[in-house]
Structure formats: C-alpha cells, structure tokens
Length: 88
Image 1 (cartoon, rainbow, N blue to C red):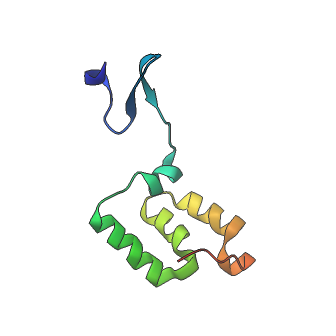
Image 2: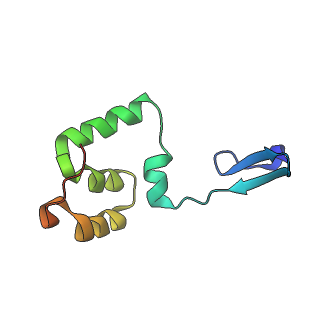
Image 3: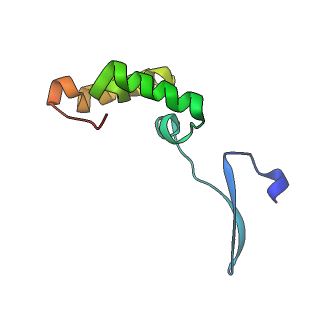
C-alpha cells in the first residue's frame, strides 16, 4: 500500500481501527503556503515580507504562480484598500 502512494500527496495512517491511505487535497493557494519548506524558501519569504510589508501575501502568491488568486486576495483583503494589517 505504501509503495503505491504518491509522495507528498498521499499519506498513510495506521490506527487501532485499521490502515489507510488518504489525500489531504490541498489546492494551489494552500500549497503556496503549506507546501514549501527549507531555509532558502523561508529566506525568500522573509525578503518578500521586508520588501512588501502587509502586501507580502499577494506577492508570495504571484511568486508561486497563482497570480489570479493574488489579485482576488488584493480585491477582497488588500491592506491598501481595507486598512487590513497583516502580521509581518
């Protein structure tokens, strides 16, 4: 069962009730944040946060290739538009 699992897509769970493979099913926006790791990526996020302040979320979405969602985020929650203060 584990040998057929797709790495970083399917996960193996073993409980007293049995075993199974499951897929969390993150979409591209969620993966832009939770699907990244490593010191280089964290450093890049830090650079973007310093350069863009409260607008860093939109810029990060653009960097990760989901510009349409960045535009949507700006429209709904943009710091300049709504006065939203995101933690930076």
